[in-house]
Image (cartoon, rainbow, N blue to C red; front, side):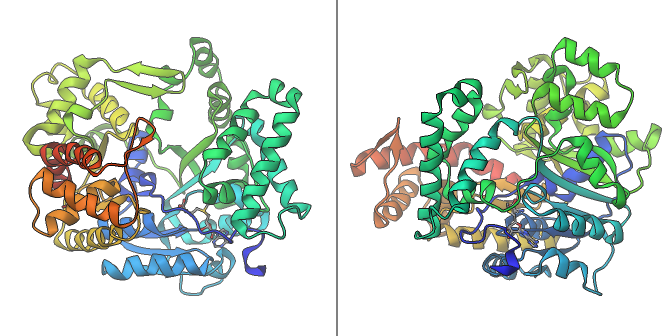
Length: 512
Ligand SMILES: C[S@@+](CC[C@H](N)C(=O)[O-])C[C@H]1O[C@@H](n2cnc3c(N)ncnc32)[C@H](O)[C@@H]1O
């Protein structure tokens, strides 16, 4: 297809949601780097390459602002527009290429330009078009978010990508449909890695990735490996590419990446401490923790936020839990392995966030809670950033009636879709301004409740009828449960948990 510039378009992309792109998370990324978060209450937002449009639609529903997006795959643009229409947002979604979008005369100046999972899979000329859009259309003070596969973590996987591509370049899968061609490329790769024992001995991570191909979703394999372009870069290379766009680095929007004390060895930390240049420092950090993926936040023209202004902004900032209190982990995985969270701080912090049926609380409120008044504000802020980074908590916002209505409409769309498909596992929260993981089972329990079912047994039977209707069964300990009673017993346990715990959290998050 000529319009696709070598981008794989035969299988559509999965329905992922990326909260790092939400205006509230981007604001927090700036604040935690002591950079003035210039993002206004009603930002003008552009997402490039929105895929199925789950992230942009959720952000347009759950946050204020004007949302623009493009993805040149028309099938995906249709699906994304359908979701947008269902929730009554004035979102503007196009099926233009980046080049066509850049040529439009009616683009506003944007406060945020975001792209997730794009940079590594497009040609150099398309990357230049993106830099040009950011240079011309991101207003001074505006924030850019770019995620990408990085070095050194992906380097050992180069032979796997090469083998998958060689299979299609030499026409070995030509007679097959797209799925058959991918199966063929995977078998070819596994066979060669299996036979070339020297390669797998010397590069065990390549062998591990080849094995993982067996169980990876075929759409993922297609979009990760089978585009004409696969661009691996380190952080310093990324900064060079962005020079023309006048961007400065803010920090990672995956907050756990920021804690050197928990990600690096003592030697690594000492080494980093001796590097003065911030770009070299950030690049070497990736080599020390073998980073594979970066979610970078940049700003055009940073200004420092400090002193009283910074303190006031932090004290006003609200936070909310994303997990039930009993599911808040006591260990969190960092680059060097699992780290025990000191419960002297984290237990009262989680209690404070859970108190009052999970209602969001400002830092000012949190600092006054029992057990926390002995801690200094920076210690509590660090704790909150760890919980946000681990997807256990989120920054929160005040809820307006319009945002509440739009989220309700979007969530109804997702629930109705749950009756025919299991592909969207996120719903919109007017409290977090973003998406919340709501697995298909819980979406179906919500559907059951909408039909007047109230007890765990009724919810479980509703879901059983659905599963039975499509010939599905639950799996337990890797085994398919065939008998109705076994399925209903498991579903009843899930429904019990939903009614006793998850439901109140979903209510506090405004998801129901
Ligand atoms: C890997 S997917 C990521 C989708 C989405 N951002 C996500 O993370 O779920 C890349 C997307 O970029 C789109 N794309 C690639 N090249 C493009 C171009 N030149 N113009 C517009 N869209 C493009 C593809 O259609 C695809 O949906």
